[in-house]
Image (cartoon, rainbow, N blue to C red; front, side):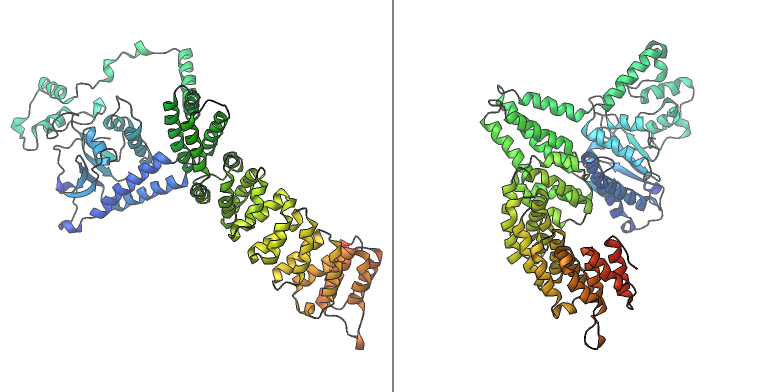
Length: 593
């Protein structure tokens, strides 16, 4: 709602509460309101309402308003051409008319505003929408006073002077409902606070004269119209509603882009082609920052299609189109996109992201691979890896070259990518990484070895069975077992008999025994049965963890003789051995307990 003060200046007595000392005024808190308001308006322009970044700025604005309104019911400020003042103190200044909040109000005749308790509530975003529209998209016949009158905010008051008049003139109320206009209030505003009872004008004629003088010439009243002249029948009303709904649901962004593409295909206007490509070069980063990946991909795809048609783009336009794709593939742009995925500014949709990334240059692969390895968000990691694969499928040579990267994150990502694409030609490079690569990369090579169709790579894992790194030993044993690389069976049997192996932990023992049982088959039954059931000198047996490992290996063998050896130990005195035997009998397909 609007308010009409008796004078254009603010009465300090109505807004000072008990602050006797001006230094005690919370001026900084009021300044913070306008700082956060400016940021919230900027976020409103750049982001969708559901975007977390936009919500954060609006929340900051609510908190700022709450701080100044929790101890007072209103804050009234004077509006000057380039600043706001409160209690005689400047709380906002911006000399740039294009960006100044103060000038936006001043330009349309508003000379003071009042922030009331409750402004921080649900109606705040409606006020932001009005301020955004009046700054960016208002029509020729729209101004801030009219928009605020249509909104009728209960917690935001304002008063205005006639636009184009002398700023020193007495203010007239912003447009309001006819029933809100009191002729006595308007006349009192004209006479000023010094008017006495003798100065008041009595009679209906004087009141009508005062009201007519106060009402702006362009104001209209509802009673001036005859509604029957403009009424629609039911069919016409439904038609209008359908057309309005179609217009509101129309994909305006796509329609505008199509119009630009149509003009871009006119080679007789090279100057216009350069101008359109310049616009598109600005739009693509804007789309990315707002998470509109579909439109960004649409721009790049359409430019690619136009460039494939000879003679459409001239030399200058062709170079500018090339720069647009280069900008999109630049490491800085890709890193910004990954950050936006992580903080939620861009929705991590694998399909939309793949549609965009497939147009990137191979030079972007290194940055994407690093991001997929370093991100802490599992969803973003999977989305990036799926999208990266669409680029790499046509550039397998680039993937092999990236295996030699000095950046461990890039090399690790390239190893995983080679595994997903099953690039057999990467086998030699992966073997070299096993020999001299960083631990992080060697571990990824081991995990990926079974996916790459290369017997040379799998065979190279035999060397890691004696590596100093326990994790690499265990991972290599499991991969060799899963790959059923039979030549490694003798390596396992030799290691199982070594004294040092008895000192390893249970996890490593299980991995080695199970791999050996899988690779050696029934040839391992005699050796494993001896470990499980035989007694040594003075009736001593193998340690329980070794016997349990042998039982699990016999379960992998699964032959009748292996099952018979397991049955002999089914009632062993050691609980860990009995448990391993029961599991092995189950895995081996039978039980002789």
